[in-house]
Image (cartoon, rainbow, N blue to C red; front, side):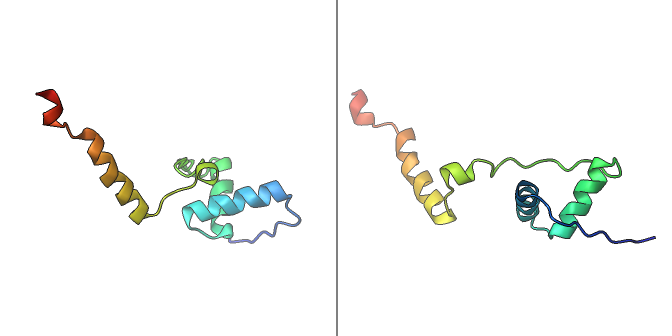
Amino acid sequence: MAGSLTLHTMDSELEERLSSYARRRKKSLNQSAKELLASALGISAPQRTDHSEDLERFIGSWDDETSEKVRANLENFSRIDEELWK
């Protein structure tokens, strides 16, 4: 039997955490809530938590272009200047 559930008046922390969870997984609030409930009730395996973006709001993140520029500039640090060793 399929049913539906409406959550009334979620506190702001719960709403923000559910929204954040859904955004990170690129899923709807509804699908995210169902996954979390199923996991909490032992119906499905718990989802692995991806912590790769946890600090992003504190330290920011780079787009692909900036990341490539940084990598290219860091390559200079791994080169040995043979002239210095003569």
